[in-house]
Image 1 (tube, rainbow, N blue to C red):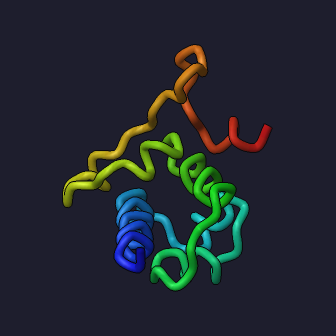
Image 2 (cartoon, rainbow, N blue to C red):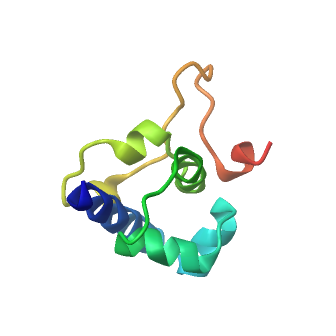
Length: 98
């Protein structure tokens, strides 16, 4: 389980860096504190489903896409996804705040 948490945190960090965002920017987009984003990235906390959803929305991904098995290039190749059952609406940070 510890590896899963650390791998998830590493992927969040890779995505953040691929977007050229600071931890503060990601925290603002996701509605989290900067220190909590840091803990997630370091794998020192287990993100809740709510946190997972907030992070996914900030990146323009579905929660499932954020949890999907990752390849080394995956963070750089990540693109906004459409949410299942969303009538092909793009997942955006603005939509997450509704």
